[in-house]
Amino acid sequence: MTSKNEIESLIYLLEDPDPEIQSSVHNRLRELGENAVPLLDQCRIQTSDDVEKELINDILHKITFGTLYEDFSDLLEEGVDDLYRLEKASLLLARFGNPTLRTEEYHRKLDRFAKEIYSDIAYKMSDDEKMRTLLRFVFRDLRFRGDEKNYHNPENAYLDRVIDRRKGLPISLSLIVIFLGRRLDIPFHGVNMPIHFMLVYEGEGQETLIDPFDGGTIVTYDQCHYFLKKNGIDPKPEHLQKTSEREILTRSVRNLMHSYSKADKKEKVKDLQSLLQLIELKG
Image (cartoon, rainbow, N blue to C red; front, side, top):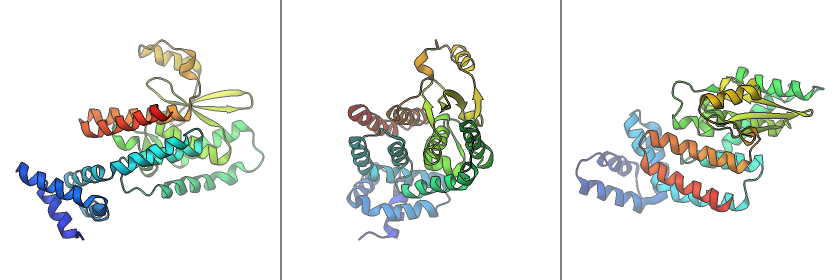
């Protein structure tokens, strides 16, 4: 049985410049496998050294990715064809960034958010009022917002970190609204617009476009067309149509690949590519 002292020694030796020592350490960690995960996680929580924390994260990722891959494959086999399963898939994907994540805790956090606002929309309210009430709750009361300063930080793409930090990308902020809308029977959907993911609300015979990165601001189709043209894209009708759960999951993985590519994390990009291939294969 391994011990915390052994794990701490292995982490320390990983920084040794001797390649033989590093090879020996990696071999030992492979032998320990997932049995070492609880102690590694404990070391990660306790350390205040960011470099060491990142090193432990990388070790945890290498040890646990095989299990994540299998779980991701099983979920895709069952189908990601509704919002409930998209939520499960999004939190499963969050284990890529936090291998010891307890995903049920974040399902419950979303449940609690929905309960906080339920009484506000339980009484007679028009669909439009319900939409605006939920948007105010998410972007004003809970203070979710776009991360303009560090847009490509991978934490902006992981649903658990977005919930904890209240910051994210357009697509991850959209998912917060969509998943709360599912619980409250308020029909929000994703719009897979190039460059900038959007929200659309379907109610009372009309659609309303919403920019989640700009505090839930309501925008027009003309504004979106102008944005696309300004960025060198010829607007097409499909750019502003609601998208499927599988396409949302695909874009979430691609966003992470882009973030890790910018950080020169080639192994992470390679592993994400394998998850993307699973989506394409089983979609």
